[in-house]
Image (cartoon, rainbow, N blue to C red):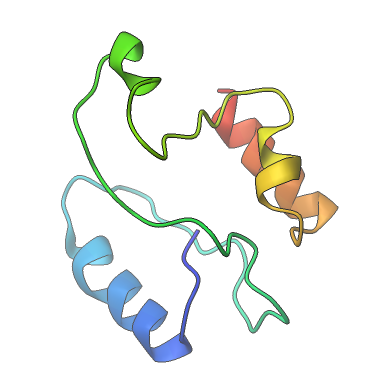
Length: 90
């Protein structure tokens, strides 16, 4: 899920993401303006971890935790929450 200014999101998706050979069969599931960000407090980052070390990382949120999506994405529509739930629990 990409959120932000339309031009920035468009540039990011059709730039480095779509050209990156690690990604296959990309599909845009929804596109358009939002009245509010769905994930206002989330920031991107990457760090190699082990399951034991994740609990010690400042700011780490376990996406598979009970109630995670509902509590961290209060502006999300029920359809989006269902889609994200299926993605997280695969």
